[in-house]
Length: 272
Ligand code: T3D
Figure 1 (cartoon, rainbow, N blue to C red):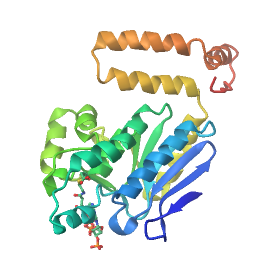
Figure 2 (figure 1 turned 180 degrees about the vertical axis):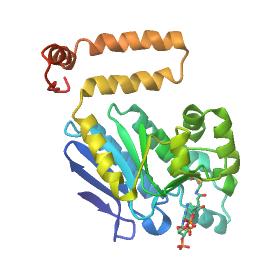
Figure 3 (figure 1 turned 90 degrees about the vertical axis):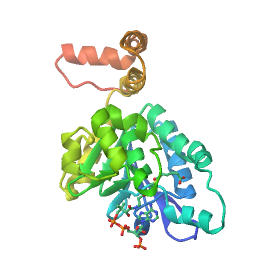
Figure 4 (figure 1 turned 90 degrees about the horizontal axis):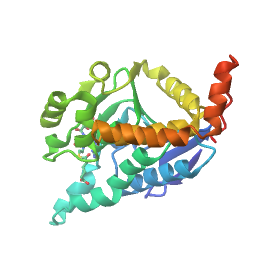
């Protein structure tokens, strides 16, 4: 378990654990429902970059300590701006801190799973939506929340939400900021699966380890394909898939996959 101390020198605000080719990042500011301050945003981005570069990591889980996944931007830090009589420049922080974190999740060619252990709101919801797969504990809930504090959507929410749940649901969630239960979220495609709270991390690790030990190149290329396919027209997506598959077809893993199928045995992938 790797961790750096929080700004007050006490509790680490991000816990990073590596085992069985899976890196688990746990947001650890439970007294404020794991709200993001600048330090936490920086540490999450750094941990994601480390996981991306580490050949011993094949998948990442992001979760939260205590009863929340993440309640978005730390609003106490915003109150301090007003109390100083300053004008907030939110665009700067979004470009410099939120954007790198979200982009890293989308561009790293390894699966990133959000394990939503509880309250998921604002940029915490944005973080969850940017992940490849969302698993939720029964009792968790998701809310865009932004509008409730007078903000528009950020951290990729306007991009991912309509793609996951369709325009009508996206507008409703974004306009109202109302929270959606884990069960409802599963029904509308906002989360993949809901598990009893005690099972959530077990199931998240099972899935992460399975993916981390799969055909790494194929998974990475597939992530690139899907990233591209959701933002281009069908013809371009088909062409890009062909280009990517040309690469996948030349990997040792593909050869191994074909041979294992023909020989009726389990494949042994090496990520090459
Ligand atoms: O600013 C920028 O850089 C732009 C980026 C913006 C991105 C955003 O995320 S904007 C949206 C920010 N988030 C929110 O608006 C959510 C605020 N929180 C809530 O509405 C509620 O806490 C929840 C609905 C999420 C949960 O409610 P509940 O009743 O379960 O918990 P609670 O009692 O409200 O919260 C527990 C504690 O966490 C409480 O502290 P206390 O009273 O025990 O000392 C509360 O103040 C604190 N907390 C919760 N969320 C935040 C927070 N403290 C700071 N920032 C938070 N976002």
